[in-house]
Length: 562
Image (cartoon, rainbow, N blue to C red; front, side, top):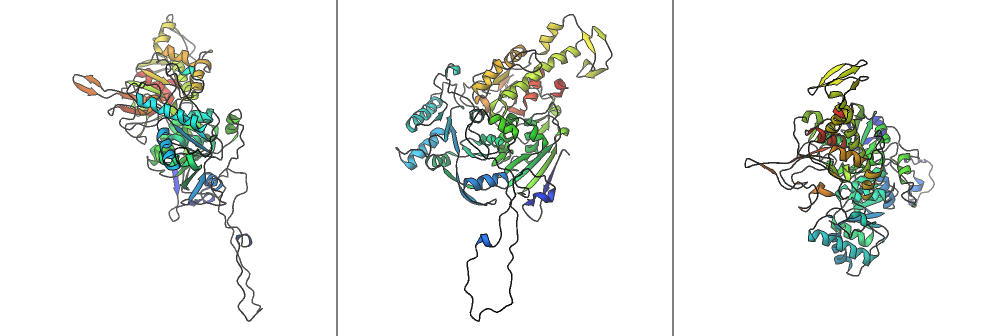
């Protein structure tokens, strides 16, 4: 097995030392010390002595070691010590809302605090239209108008508005998907509390902060007070070690974890990610990891801040922040260990994120489309990964065509019915250019939806490594993909019927409706999630999505990357 779980049978918590966990904090730990009182046998009075108050400071420390999440809760509630299960009033550092939940939250705020009430802090509220943006739906457009009016009324500093729906580039303030924009605009900081009216707010846990989704009622209360009553969650620890194979991405790691513990395995629990593999991940990959903890029922996901975190934030925020780390003897509900070097590319089959399967086991599943986008799989590095697969297909085609002339050595192998040449072999073909172009073409419609305006710009400006200076957009065009769309949540959650790439209708064949089958880099595959309720969604990494686009079947990316 690539993973193992360790749990306590007699105690719901286990001591970190008992399972051989290494220390992830150089700071002094809170140690448990026993209080002892000296008992004197000398009689000093025949009267009963006056009882004196026993103060904690004179009877020894009673503090317990804490996890990262517990420490953040303690700091935000101004308490020296907290344990899982305690309910505390937490001071909120950032509240985020968007066009879907913002109007409802605003309505509750005005109803409970008054029509003329002011928000608790106009600089700690971030409002990001991103869900139902590029649509003619009047109610969706009205939602953005409500946000705009409220932000003007309350003088909200961070409102990323959009007015010209015909050309997103004409809106310099518009960003795109809230969870990616929060990071890019410097609203994510280690040690802080970030709440948002979206279940994938947990994405920000990648920065070593507590981040979770809340409902409209809670958000309305936070707007007026800056506080929220929260229960301290227990923590599950996921230790991932081993060198990350070049065909895996963080999406594979989180699908492995969800498949391991199920969609309810982390219900109202913090999921802490540590280990050498996690330390090697970029910030965007860590965001992918934390993004989908809610698909396991998790309250929040969290990664310890390190030099990678600090480097990312260096040019994004000038505000001071103080990271926290789990103590050496912090208590974890259970621990899961993974040897990442032994994992394989995965998909989550319909209709649940925990319906885990190896990508190679689904090679006979014919697909109708591929979708690359969302807060999970629409970041710059996600598109670079997809472009890497399309680039790799050039070399695959080069070695599977009919061999006209060979030199050097090379072992001839059989793969998918084609002849391939081993490493070191040079194949010469007089019509190489035409073969090249044909080999890179996608077999199904491939939709590209950048998460934010910055990501969209990256697709047209950043050269893809190993491409000879080509950008993602050039590579995608050569491969026959759709032109990158306007940045938004797009079809990830369906949306109005005119939403780009939405799965609107099943295909009709001989009076029988056949459901669309989509390989998607998004986060959920429930019935109706991307539109039509009969749609079949296979969740996958950008590597697997791109490989599947090239073949028209669910495809293990190792066919192109190895």
